[in-house]
Image 1 (cartoon, rainbow, N blue to C red):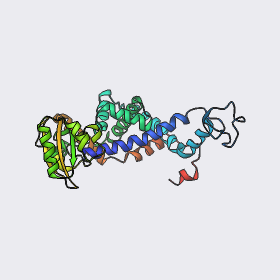
Image 2: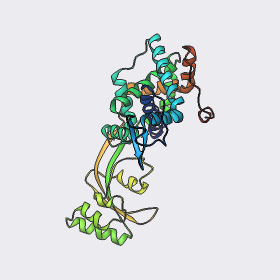
Image 3: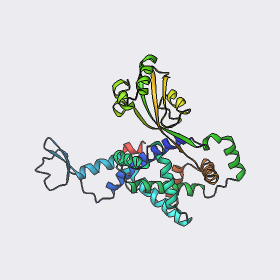
Image 4: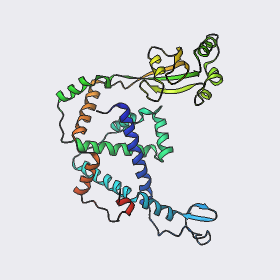
Length: 320
């Protein structure tokens, strides 16, 4: 079974690909007109829908759509066929995805973000996907997975064996909201601790003293961090494990260079699940491990329902 972080990374990859395909499909399904020449003057193209201009030259919506079709049209059409094939198969097998399942998947996909709202905002800014688009993509993935494992049976012994061998995966995780002041020497760190004991504000001292240019103007805040975050100095996370919310610790020697004074702002436990939820998750993942790859399943469903592309891919698309 893949780790929680790997799940988040795979989810990001899946959503990124889906976002590209989704944006292309929105354009492909519009009524398309023959594209004009990009070299036509603004006067010659008067009356056409302009989406951009450069040095008096207009780029029309038709030209924009033509370029999108050339670059991504083949993939978008395949995804549109996939959605129809998966929907048809789900109806035939009486497979449904509940709103609760969609919410749970989105919660898992958002685990690498500060909150679900931050996740939705990232999808909107980076991919142009609204919250409705994100939910629709989650529903599609869940439906495809249910089709893939419908005839795969995982017995209780297999589930018990996996849980017994991977207990650490199911332990509640901690998230720390941290702030730090990075300093050059132990002596400077001790002086900073003295000033904190005298009542000076941690954020102000971070802005004045910290060598970390990325956090010092935010009062040294590192944000909410998982206990095994690979992008945060391990020395800080090791020290945080023995602290409570509100504690200040230091000097902490950093392996890369220098010392740190750290403040624990808050501690949150995440990933607490019931025994039933854990067993259901393990059973599903073990079944998916035995199932055909989902891309192969999509192809087989397209064949089953006679889906085919009428338009021909460009040489560049055919080579992919």
